[in-house]
Amino acid sequence: MSDQNQQQQINIELDEKIAEGIYSNLAIINHSASEFVLDFVCIMPGAPKAKVKSRIVLTPQHAKRLVKALAENVHRFELAHGEIKDSEQPPIPLNFGPAGQA
Image (cartoon, rainbow, N blue to C red):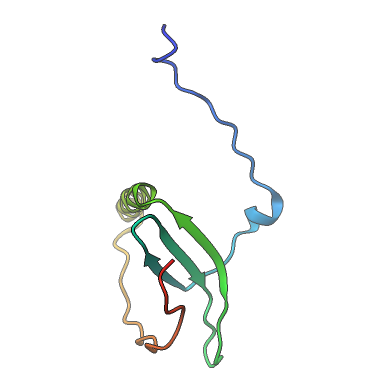
């Protein structure tokens, strides 16, 4: 078998702190010509302020792959567990979140 036919194996480490995850109930997405910026926020009811808990910066190509992978996983989830209902969310104030592009 040639080297081109063998898949390269990558060992991915997940440290304990990252493995805990971060809860988010809002994502703010901005983009420029060269990158997509995803800010994950947790808004608590009645709180006048919310902080960005995590920011992920992606190339446009990786953003498109993420959209495709997420759609495929949502589809598999719904096949196993039924349709995910999209509940009505109150509108977020227009002055909330970052104003500029990355």
